[in-house]
Image 1 (tube, rainbow, N blue to C red):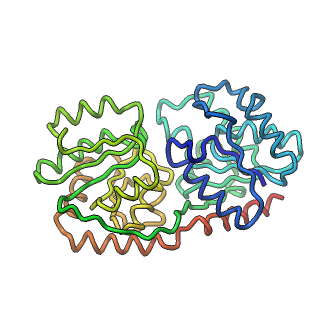
Image 2 (tube, rainbow, N blue to C red; image 1 turned 90 degrees about the vertical axis):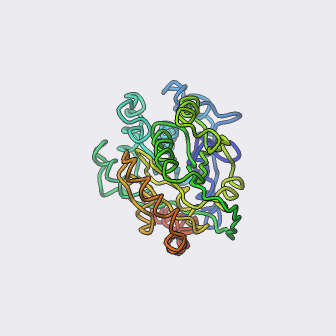
Image 3 (spheres, rainbow, N blue to C red; image 1 turned 180 degrees about the horizontal axis):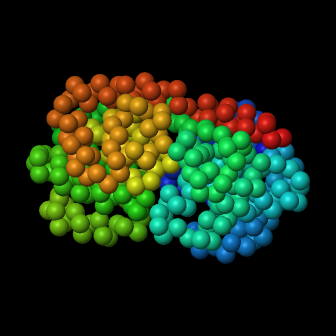
Length: 343
């Protein structure tokens, strides 16, 4: 089989590349896998002409390297044109794997040309895998995808031996892209509410994105510059090191098809307060769920965990137990079952 992805470690910008690596490595333990990414340094797919995604360098690369593949497993819209071209030329099946939809990433600013590519791919694929039931429902609602060919396969995480680095100072962390979808602006407002109640709590906002400069200004206006860490994008080991000294993870995303970092936090027994849009909540009932945009609700839930160590520990341990079965091997086994159905 061939796995198509626009990003793959070490070249990652967010959860897509990490998820594709986890899935590919686990699949490779079950069957032969050819991972196909753009040659050289990947360009932003939003800067590509739609025709280039199908007939350009990446499309040609897929036709060459997947020439003998029985099936193509394509991840998110930017790989769908190449997968469709491959399927037309070979007559073999392909499966679309949806980590997020354009409407999730951009909301009301969703680009029509991306939606067109996304919709065509999802309708033409022999099967569609969605990372959550919420995402699967959106595929039906937004693009009329037949429920009969939809399969929900949740993401997983690599097994890790967690550790704890106690600093004596409570820390609330946000880990994600600094974009509209992830609501880092809401996190700053949540932090401001918590800071009013406690002069000790520290905050970390790890990630990069177009909202970065605006967020720095917003933090300064609240007088919180000295209480905020903003390390930018951090790699896997740095994420784990941050989780080891984090007391509560905040994930206030406006849209979150899955939310891998909440699973990673659970592995470290760090309780998460997440928006009700987050697909990861299907795996982590112990996470505290708050409506997206409810700054006061998030602040209250987080504050309750910060000031109650026993409640925080109990929720963290419950989350850790719930996350133990969420492995990439389990994800890969479910993906293989879908692929077998279309071959």
